[in-house]
Length: 130
Image (tube, helix red, strand yellow):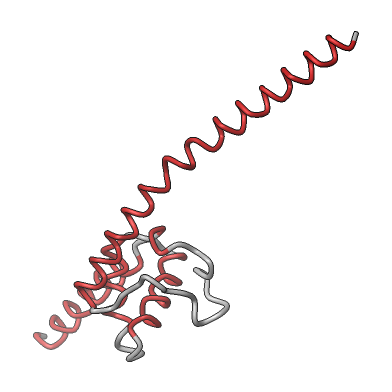
């Protein structure tokens, strides 16, 4: 009887260890990819705007993107976003944070904004021509 209890306990422990290992393995495999992606974002944003996002943290509480990873958003949208939001602030990191908040609502926010502005300029030019 003791052997049977010991065997069942051992089997349960082995099953637990295997489950934990199989669950953790994909997470471990993702970490280098996330680190590479972050480095890609860091380099591109630094090249485009001269800011280093290494220690980026939310400075404005209450935004839709609070606590979210910067790599969650499309890199080109972020770069466009900082350019646009610099119209409202001289703080480039704050412009980045505002961009993330907008992208949390609409993943292609800055592309949509660009198209809307283009359409408005065309409409304005047509009115002047008439």
